[in-house]
Image (cartoon, rainbow, N blue to C red; front, side, top):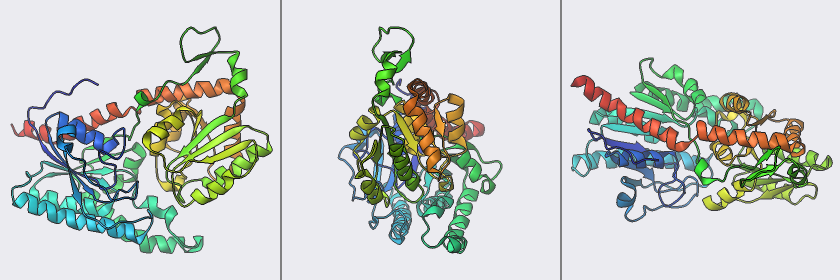
Length: 443
């Protein structure tokens, strides 16, 4: 990507996000890191407020030395208590720590002249507490308040609520009702709203004022990290990465390599995957299903991995980025197992699957399903139905020409629609335009 041109009117921009990995924890940069780096390269003064506890790694974090020189932006840590489980009282207490301490530190730093008053405060949702503190600070400091919606929080928490199904409506009202009201207040207070998907934006539209600027910036992936998938063609190839048609028989003799990555929690269709693996073995379908991630279903997956059969489950645990990239590069199919009630329009792993040129098998309706169908990038299955998932995997295992076509289509989808370098550049243009447009109007 070409070097960005500095802007004529540099802005002071605060990003409030305690959940994403910071520099030194994850490569390539995730969404917030990519945005902060690009904005800083354009000459803006960017400060990223985050927590001392890493949400993904469940470890205490520290800021690498020389980050301002290396990245161009500042990372400020806010002390919070640790937590081990994503759905726990300890996690919500940690988020409360973040909101209270961030607000106090921000007020003190501006009053003491240590930090410039921000022109824009961009706050991620979830969680609630940091975004609520950001809204109050934006009013006090006369800054533009922008909410960056990652998912339809707190609706996305509903699958994780403990207790019997009959009590779930009551528990939802008790646990999520006040959180939903807090979310609605935040969105009403926003001067602008960004979201990670169109479905996500629509899900919150009732709480957003009609005149508020809105932008969709998908999480995206990095196709540049992965080699292009092989192609099956009808003539003898001369270029690397192309397979002649007679190679299809050789490819079909190899087990189909599938992967599921992500949080192995209650909003993932893991029971269906385990049952489908048994059905595939009973049918004599040779496949290997790799699992990359951690969560409450990890033990069940490791037990399933011990079973014998033609379809094997391999539990890899939480992988470092390079090992994760290498795993995806060796696979053929990416499994999107998020349940529809998880309210995730496009899970982050789907972008990585597409970037790696993996055929997508997804049980999610809506935005991702539409992308897959329009691009011809994979197959749908019915969430909760092992036979449906079995059919999808078996189809791709037995029809390697179709698999190759889906893989090529997925890679094209990643390059045309899901390339993070392009989506982040568009996001930065929109964000800085909120203030620069006002300056032009005032002039």
